[in-house]
Image (cartoon, rainbow, N blue to C red; front, side, top):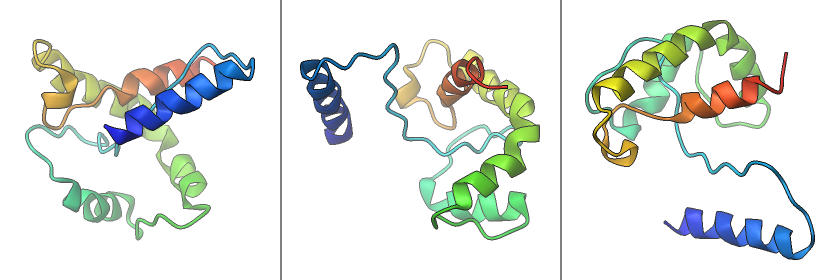
Length: 116
């Protein structure tokens, strides 16, 4: 919850300085929808699953995010569809309480409106 409070504080500080923006996103998610995943997925498994799927060692080193993005971009449509399936199945459950589901695909779809 402290992350949310910090994001709100940053937004409010920007407003006080006269800076405005149309969107404000706070994202903490690991996108593992290359294949359809259902059920619990503990975050301790994220790096090993990404390494297995990517065929190279997953890293948090500077610059790796751009490499990763370029590698997974061709799979984006499939990943979005795979993210939508569990969300539809759990539509009556708050996303924060739903295992192996995420709404980050909604952010990706919105961001796609600004690129390409």
